[in-house]
Amino acid sequence: MLPNFEKLREEMIENQIIKRGIKDAEVIEAFRKVPREEFLPPEKREFAYFDSPIELSLGQTISQPFIVALMVYSLKARKRLKCLEVGTGSGYLTAILLELGLEVYSIERYEELANLAVKNLKKFDYKNYKIFVGDGTLGLPEYAPFDRIIVSACAPKIPTPLIDQLTENKGIMIIPIEENFSQKLIKITKDKDILGEEFLDYVRFVPLIGKEGFKDAL
Image (cartoon, rainbow, N blue to C red; front, side, top):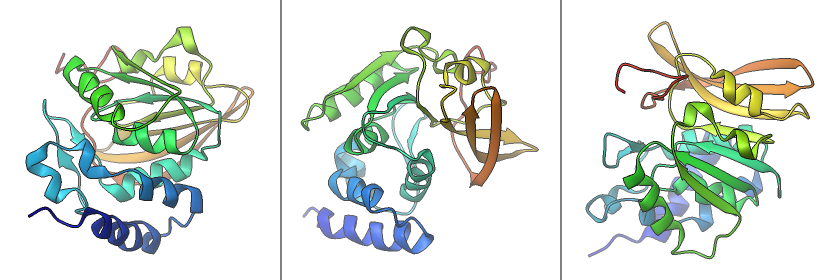
C-alpha cells in the first residue's frame, strides 16, 4: 500500500521547511505543487519526504528538502529571470524553479540522469527549460548572462566561468564550497564589479566534478 504522499508533503512543508524559518509563500507553494516522490526511483518513493537526502543512481543524490528550500529562498527567485542550474539530477530542483516562474537552463554531467530528468519533467506541463549534458563548472556561456545560478554539488572554489556568466545587474549565485574539511553553502551577489559573499549553512553535497571543480574523479 502506497503512503499518503499528499499528507506527507504537507507534514514535510510544516515541520522541515516552515518551522526552520522558510516562510516565503511562493517558495512554500512551489514545494506543495511538486510531488517529490515522482523524482525518485520507485523503490525509494516511500522515503520521499524523509528529512534527508536520498541516493539516486551513479552516486548522485536528491537533496534534503530543507536545503533545497534554503537554496531556493536565498536565490530570491522571480518570474521570468534566467537561471542556470548546475547538477540537474532527477529534475526535482528544476521543477521547483519552474514552479517559481524562472527560465531554467540546467546542465548535468551524466547523460543517464539528464534523460531521467527530462522524463520526469515531461510528466508535468512545464515549459521554459533546457537540459544539457556537459561540464557544469564551465556553465553555458552561449546562453549567458544569467540572473541566477544555483549549484547542487560542492566545489573546491567558486568556478570562474560561473562568476563570469552571472549578470552584473544584481545577480545571485548559490553554491556549496569546501573549506577546511567542511562544506559551506554560500550566497554570492554580483552588482557591477562588486562581489558579495554570505554564509548560509553547513551542508553535505556530492563533489562538483569538472575542469573548474574537483578533478580526481574525472
